Amino acid sequence: MSKRFLSSQHGYSLVEISIVLAVMGLLVGSVSVGKDVIQQAEHYKLTQKFVLPWKQAYDQYYQRTGVMLGDNQVAPTYMVAGAEAYLSYDDGSVAGIPQNYLQTGRRICHGQGYPQGSVGIGDRTLANQDLHWLLDRVGIRMPPGRAEDKEDRYVYEDSNGNPAEMQICFQWNPDRTVSGSGNVMVLRGLTPDMARMLDQFVDGKPDALEGRFRQQNNDNNDREQSRQRPGHEWLANNTYAMGNQVPTAFSLGESQDENRVILLTAHWIMDQ
Image 1 (cartoon, helix red, strand yellow):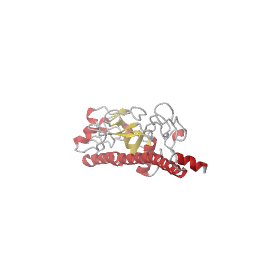
Image 2 (cartoon, one colour; image 1 turned 90 degrees about the vertical axis):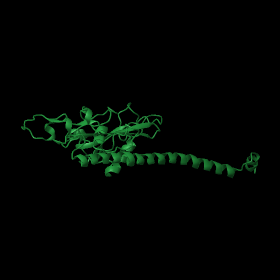
Image 3 (cartoon, helix red, strand yellow; image 1 turned 90 degrees about the horizontal axis):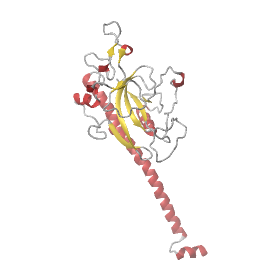
Image 4 (tube, helix red, strand yellow; image 1 turned 30 degrees about the horizontal axis):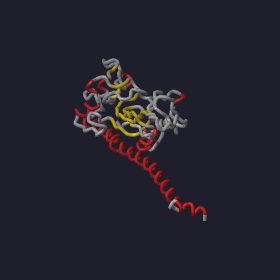
């Protein structure tokens, strides 16, 4: 009686207050879930409207020219940026196979973007090996990307709400490269959750050392500590911030929700 009397003094019954609190809890929960749903939808959009179209642009270049992106049409090497490569001896004394070429492994990009964690010599040196110029030259329309003249970039939010930029490049990896040998698409600026989602999407194997989508790695497979083995997690997670820790798959980083989530680089092995 006393509780009912006290609550009625303020115009609300205990039942009404309980209903209001329950509704408030549902609203707060739905806002949290809604944020995750929106982020998942944004990741799907990035995959369908940016990453896959760039794979298709690479394939179209091969179909129209008969060579890899940036290769020499007169004397093809079957390597990305092959126009910059040359044989150690051009007198016919050595075979025209990758290990006899010099100046290989250069990335074809549009601007340097993220220089950290590089694998290979670096970005291309010839002016006519620019990613945009090569595609424009053969009439291939690039995906919309971030903006005009930034078609190779895409901006999205990490799980803490901070902006991150993904950049697309292409390069050739020599044999025994942990992230896959041959011609690869280089995806710079992936959050760990984005990298795992793309890995699962591309080859159904969310493994950083197996399948066609792998984490960039400076080591070779002949090194004992990095030899390929099944079940290797991506070497980072979303609790790590940019630049202040050595990430691992299972350890806990700073886990501060105001930090910029660490960004990774992946290699997607191309079909040719």
